[in-house]
Amino acid sequence: MSHAFRRTLAAILLCLFPLIAGAQSGYTATRHPIVLVHGLLGFDSLLGVYDYWYGMPSSLRSGGARVYVANVSASHFTEVRGEQLIRDLDRLRAVYGHARFNLIGHSHGGPTIRYVASVRPDLVASVTSVGAPHTGSKVADGLNSALPPGSPLRPLVAGFVNALSVFIEVLSGGAGDPQNALGALASLSSQGAATFNAQHPQGKPTSSCGQGAAVVNGIRYYSWGGTGVLTHVLDASDPLMGAGSLFFGWEQNDGLVGRCSSHWGVVLRDDYFWNHLDEVNQVLGLTSWFAPNPVSVVRAHANRLKNAGL
Image 1 (cartoon, rainbow, N blue to C red):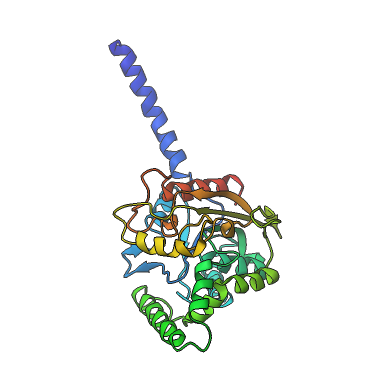
Image 2: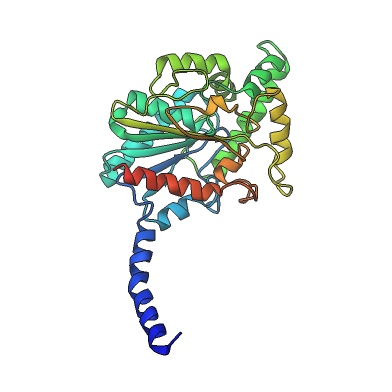
């Protein structure tokens, strides 16, 4: 390769670099802000240093997205969490002038954002659920069976979960939202989910493991989920996911949510080799070496929203 050719090639690359960098910096620059909504026993950030959506907010922002991370009750009825989210979205709209939001909810965050889209469609541009138990979780059903109303252990377990929820609220600097473990259990059960879906059916699949409408009331609906359980030998949470998977028998699941239960709206994919915590890049990003990076998946989805004018 001649010296002149190398200089020419270097000059071309120097010219292209700003264009490439600019394209990457705008990769996740959606029209409407993205709001990430946690699931059961979730949070925005513990002590401001440890994110529930591990590494995702910063990565989305690096591509140009405006990102807010919600902090609603760690445990409560779906409707209560949804009203709390509406409160926060109204505040963001008032302070920053945002018109609508792209809502992304993990686990119980999925039904939570669906509630908002149902009762306040003026606030929502898109709804994306990640590993959400839209038809309930068999783990919740199993706990209801093991701790039926009247069982002396039921209030003890509920009290422990409520205390844990309050502790999480304190560590995350929350607004002092109330906690209700039994309310969360009711919402996440199959019966509770069926009642909720009858009241808020937008995007509901037309068959038990199918897809739902892509657009309802001008709001786009998407979902994805995982079917891995034991995904990383160094992840201390994997045994918990393994225990949860026992409730599902032969049904594919992520340790807490069945494969078909995660379906809502347009199903982008339902079989990532992720367990329930991998879906938000937990714990400490220790996900399978053989599965897509959850951060890259959520970035690609932000680009999808951008290209859809959202």
